[in-house]
Image (tube, rainbow, N blue to C red; front, side, top):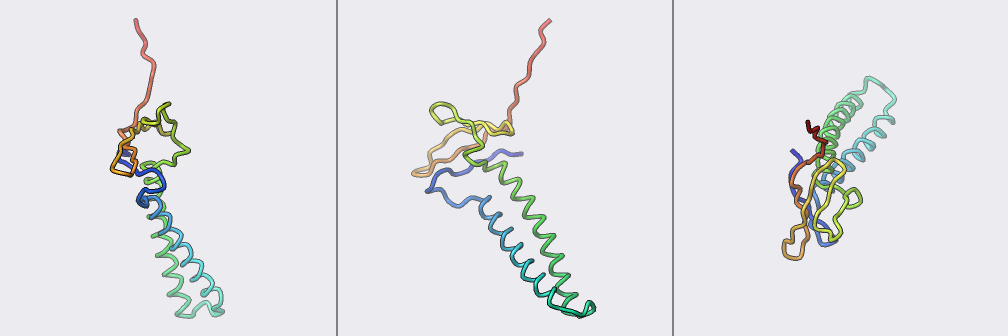
Length: 125
């Protein structure tokens, strides 16, 4: 299900999407550092090199999980540029067909995703 809500605007609390993107960047940076250390090791049977390879593999698996969560979060929290808004801006439509409505939570503006909708033609006899 892709139903949910997401904050909008500069005052919005940092989003889940941003947190996953930050986590993914940290993992990728750590993998790059480990790869540099591994490249410095000349002996392929060095125990440290094997440990580093194992850690890179573990981080790669973790990066795949975080990337999957990030992709799902991008559906739940679409960028404003991906939404089509009504004239008064209180209803939006995502590229995937999700309908969003604007809700004020104090000073924070949120869009609640109501669900996915589609339109199809009906043949009449």
